[in-house]
Amino acid sequence: MWLPRLACAACGTALPLASAPLRCEQCGTLVMERDGILRCASEARLDRVRPFLAQYRTVRRADGHVVRSAAEYQALPSVSPTAANVDEWRIRQQSLDTLLRAFSTARRSARVLDLGAGNGWLSQRLTARGHAVVAVDLNDDGEDGLGAAAASRVAFCRVQAGFERVPFESGQFDVVVFNASLHYADEPGAVLTESRRLLANGGALVVMDSPIFVQAHDGERMVEEQLAGLRTRFGLSSPISCGRGFLTLAELGQAAGTFGMAATFTRSSGPWLWRLRRAWSGLRLGRQPAMFGVWVAR
Ligand SMILES: C[S@@+](CC[C@H](N)C(=O)[O-])C[C@H]1O[C@@H](n2cnc3c(N)ncnc32)[C@H](O)[C@@H]1O
Image 1 (cartoon, protein in one colour):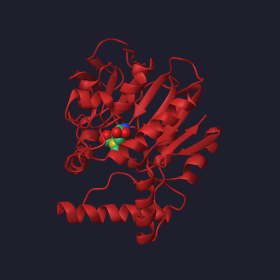
Image 2 (image 1 turned 180 degrees about the horizontal axis):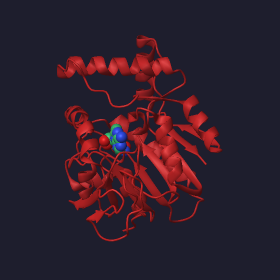
Image 3 (image 1 turned 45 degrees about the vertical axis):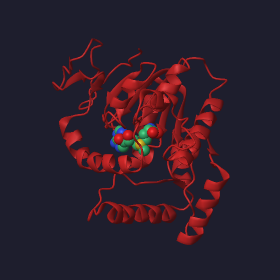
Image 4 (image 1 turned 90 degrees about the vertical axis):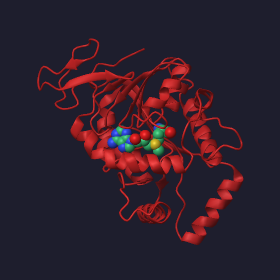
């Protein structure tokens, strides 16, 4: 299992390559391994995210985002026609196909960083195709976070850390991918800059399956609707939001321009009934529905 060169999450100093626990010579920060996950997030960072993760778990469970068996995990993003969120998983499958096509002519084994990996289904898929993958998330939950990847049929490195400050030395990855995760960032532009630092020469940045809008005010409306939904469904008086909740094509394009990269966006439209339902709810709500798909900059 490939492990990139680590840097201290607190001060950025390179950490010696040895087995965990590792101690930063500069600031004394300790990196432990527990349950097969390298623990690089500080207690302070975890304390900040815990209230959100508690709410996130409740909502995700209620929405059926729980992997019930190893077989179910290993098949993702393929699910049975009767599974919860089947249409959503069809979009994810379509986006995965786009991603694989985009890199089909590239080198056989790429070093991939999966940021906001969740249960790591994408890491599993890419590792099984021969790529060297590292999955990073703050959530180590056994049903929906890094812990769930214990059911993976192939092993990949799992690191508990925030994507605002990734605990690796620069220039080590051929692909950095945010899979349905960049919209959880408070400042997506700053997080993209951090991910750019991690790319090797000629590497690619990928943002897939975040809700993307042309106009920011449509995204803001969607976030308001989601928060209202949390209040009604879960009786939460002040639901915790994590990050902006959406992205715009313009801000992604601007980031690519700043990095001197050219970007493309391939939309995943999903099954026709899903498209119809979304178009209808867009009319009802008076806003553009979110777009999903794969944005690649290189
Ligand atoms: C909707 S889930 C997507 C998970 C997975 N990539 C997938 O496609 O199923 C978003 C993930 O982003 C993670 N996340 C949110 N903010 C994060 C941060 N600041 N650093 C690292 N991960 C974060 C969450 O814990 C969650 O697992």
